[in-house]
Image 1 (cartoon, rainbow, N blue to C red):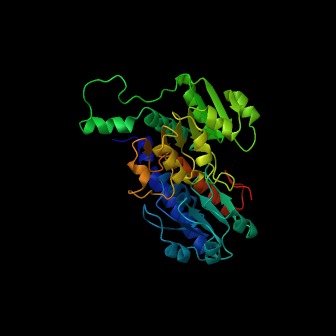
Image 2: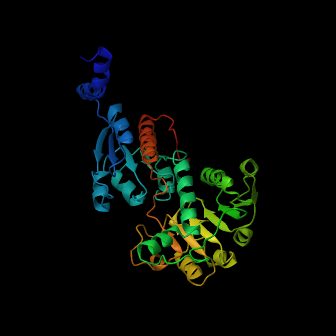
Image 3: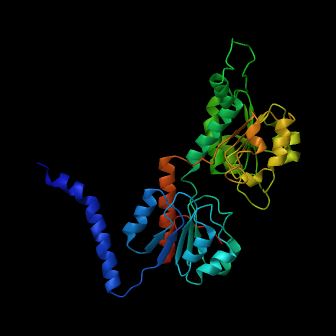
Length: 356
């Protein structure tokens, strides 16, 4: 027979759901209209639970793992007060016009917000929430994993083992590049760049270099990284890790000018945004031996078409934008986006708000 405490734990979810329903009914009975919120995708459960249990908004959701069609989104945003979106939704003048003057807050389940037209939101006094910090560790882990997979030719080696290429032992067969004694360059030294450096130090990296819009002296001193020009970053680094945000200044910054200055045995890794790389220039650099290999978690477009030339190269490892893909991280992102949305609807300070 169960104890009272066991019964209490067993029925706790039902009690919470009942309380939420009572709260909603009480508000409706009092003639109060709950603010309408539209969620553009299925999201991890922690965020949805927070929104539902708040009892402070009326939720409508696109119930699919695929992005909501643009035409459907433009219809559904009409008259809403809050929008919970992802990177796949373009939040521009057309959408804001469709939403109308009722829209108070946009909360994106992402660190990047280049899909949002901030100027339009600022004009309309619409607040924006985003989800930095919570995915730093997951992205850093994936970046290091991608670096090792690319530099040590792991995907290529797996294919050789599966397809009969694994013959007698050969001294230089499947040889890649090691991290010990190397120079690692970080393009964009922020939270993720710092986390990557901390994970790479035990590998015996000799020198960390970085380039950013301006020197990050305090952070650089903390992790023993040296500020250099972009040209010097290219010339000196054995491995270049791209961690910068996508801005008008960084759009296409990794191009033929950068690749032509890199070492022929250098490895290029990008886990930031696809548009910081000119993919035609990268393809040329890989095919013509300007650099040894590249690892990409982000591309333009996404998904990258399966017949894209980069997929045909053995020295290019491409992942389907999974840097933050741990269950814990995605739930933390969804929860932060939910809390940003609720705070914005109430007019309170958001946990993480984009300054406009």
